Image (cartoon, helix red, strand yellow):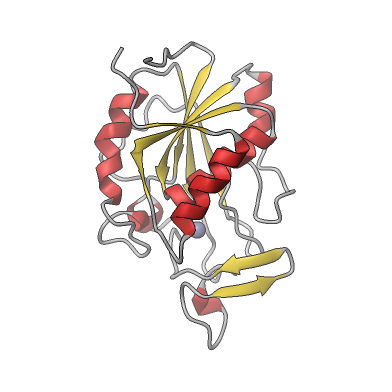
Length: 210
Ligand code: VGL
Ligand code: ZN
């Protein structure tokens, strides 16, 4: 049954930035493969929002900010457990820019996240304390946008957290798998699928071309 895209549906494009693509500081395998898929998807939507991971240098999610710690280790932060990452998506750097072939012109808003030094933000809706809002849910409600299609990077971190939060906030959420790629760190991808299923996130491979 092909899904019909309506005028009150939103495409939420997560973190399609150079640092998450091959050659980037936190490259996701095959990450740039999502670009043509998402560009094509976007043609079908009246509403598009982009997210942009946007860290100050010295961000607390960077392993380099924790002497003796290594990237991809976990660490306890005041707000909970946090994975440490290589320095990535530093504000204003080429790595933080959107992939050059991502079509961004029709996006009506860009949500930047992770811009506070002391807290990371995977989700487009909440920072990693799971309580501090980004404002996206208020925006969507005011605009009467109710169903959110998600694609981007990475499936098991920012896409996953965004999809689960969308459900938690009462939106319908549909993950478009062909438009996502994963980091897959210590079982994170299978955990993400389980979490999304439990949250009622719908999963489709691609949208049938209208
Ligand atoms: C992401 C790790 C750190 C993501 C962002 O976009 O999935 N992952 N920052
Ligand atoms: Zn980040």
